[in-house]
Structure formats: C-alpha cells, structure tokens
Amino acid sequence: MEILFLDIKDNEMKKVIACAALMAVGICDAFAQSSVTLYGRVASGFDFVSNVATQDGQSKNNYRFGSNQYGISWWGLKGDEDLGGGLYAVFNLESMFTAGTGQLPGDSLFNRYAYVGLSNANYGSLWLGRVMSLTDETGYYLDPFGEQVTGIANFAKGRAWGSRANTMTYNSPKWAGFSFRLQNGFGNEAGNFRGDRQFSASATYSLGGFNAYGVYEEIRDANGKFSSLYSASREYMIGGTYQFSALKLYTGFQQLVSSGQDTVTDATNPTGATRNQQEWLGATYQVNPALAFQAAWFHGNVNHGGGSGNLGVIGTTYNLSKRTFLYATFGAMFNGGNAAFPVETADSLPLPGHNQQGGYFGMMHYF
Image 1 (cartoon, rainbow, N blue to C red):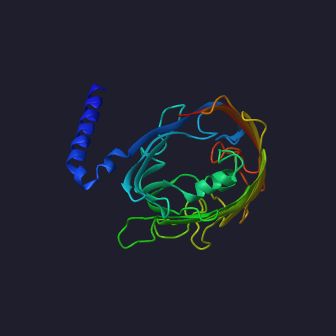
Image 2: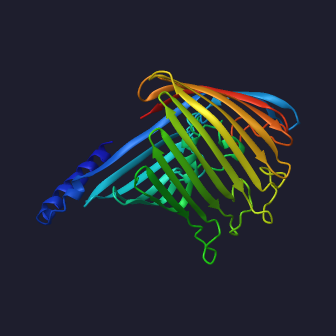
Image 3: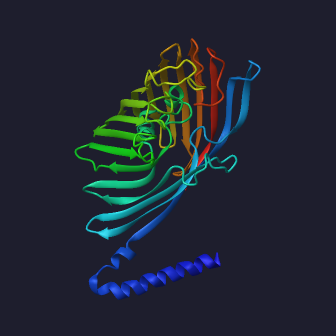
C-alpha cells in the first residue's frame, strides 16, 4: 500500500510539472479532466433443479449453491479523459467471476470488456477491443427476466450471451428516439478474412412508454461457414416493450439459422437441426419502490426432429436499499418430442422428452 501511495504521489507531481510547462499553450486541462471509476456487483444464493439426467439413464434432483443463476458477478474499471472540443478518450475493463468459488470463467481476465476508444455526444462512440455482444444487450432489454439463466436463453442455449473479441464497435447517438450499433469482430488469420469472423447490427426506437429493439448477428467458424446452430450461425431477434405506469409488457421473437449443407451434428445439436425459433410474452409489475414481480411464457421449436418446448417462469425482487436486493425465480420446462431443454440454460439437462422444474433465490449487491 505504501508503494502504491508513493506511485500516486509521483504521478500527481508529474501532472503538475507537465501542466506548468504546457500552461502557455493551454493543454493541461486534458490532465485535470480525467476520471476512473471502480464498480461491480456480487450475487450468491441457493439453487435447485429437478429431473437432472445422470450417466446411468436415471433422473435425480440437484440442490446446490447458486452463484450465477440470477446474474453472474463482475467488477470493472472505466474512465474517460476530456480531449477538448467535446471529444473524450474512454476505456473499460470488466471481468466476470463466480462468487461461490471466486474463479473466472474461461481463460481471460477481462472477459466482458477490454476496450479503448473515443466518444463524442454528437457523433457517437467507437470502441476497440473486447465488448459484450449486441445480441446480449438486446436480449437483456426484451427478456422480462433480464437474461437470467431461466428466460429467453434457454431455447437458444445461450447463443446470444457473452462478449466478442477483437472487435470494432460503433455506438450512435440518439436521434428522435432512434439509435443503432454496429460491431465487427476479426478472425485475425492471414488469407482467411471470413474465418472466425463476427458481424452484428442492432437498432432501438423509443416513443413514450414504447420501446422497439432489433438485432442481427452472424458468427462464422474457422472455415468461414455457418456450421453450428448454437455457436457458428446467424441470429435474428426482434421485439418490444410497453410501460403502463407500474406494469411493463414484453414480447419478442428469436431465430437461429445455420447452413443446411455445412451444419455438423454434435452434443448440442444431435439431430443436425438448422433452425431454432422462439417466441415469448411477459410482464413485470412494480408494486412499490421495493417490491416487484415478473412472469413470462416462452415457446421454442427446433427443426429436423429437434423437438419443441414451453417454459413458464415467475419471479420477484425486493430492494433492501438502492444497491442491494433479494431475488427469487422459479421455472417449469415442458419438453416435447426429442427435446431436452433445461430449466436453466445449458446446465443440468433432463432426459429427452422429460419435463424439468427449478428455482433459485439469493441476494445481489452493487458497488
């Protein structure tokens, strides 16, 4: 701690000296008008899932510690520097972690955001680096449960989730309620521009209590093809919300499409399906500043004999303060045909054609 303190003092002294030397040309304001913010959230609780398929072909219930069901924990650093004329240099470093173990998912430290860029209120912003996907953002706004593990991600097996690496992301300003975003991710292989490439575009329109959202994303495999319905495919999502005082209504449609001639069969897609589509309706109700309820119904269908399913979800949150709240979410998945959709996204799958129930409750704190 003492060394860090000395470093800070040394940096401040350097700023003072630089400002004194450059005062004549008036550029020391760029040093003075900068800021860095530490922020984050931590969530933990209890989770249970019924009818989990076991290796011996049986079904068992699972009662466990819950870390990421309502939403994963994260911490981050973000800041900006005033470059003058309304232009700012910006950066964001953000890392997910599992509160139950303290571990990071994957092998990256800053696995949500790691970008630097420029921002201007009149022209928008450009970010260079790792950024959360546009599908993740759109899904959050259209899902009554804010993309918890039980919600719109169940039937798409989390296809919309997560960040995208090696991206250039443009965020427009808002014009008369309309705004858009563009994102391009590079595969970084010589002579193979399409390999592992990602491209996405999203748009938002707001008018009074009405909000409309749409997003398109394509992710290609190493050969530049759409060979996996849940990891190398095209995704479309569109929907809207409407706020009636304390009541907010949600509706949406999502579709995943892979190439018929290139799609491969794997554990996530045993029937070699090339199309997955989903529709949903939901609502949230703010009883008072502390208490809120959520409810939704989701339907999903997969071609080539992949089956179909229906998911019903209810939930509630209770604010203990402006930064701390309690949560509880309960869902029931009804699978048809060969479908084995889980009640919690991509985790603890049931046997094909079997139904599953689950729920979780806990606490989240923001800082």
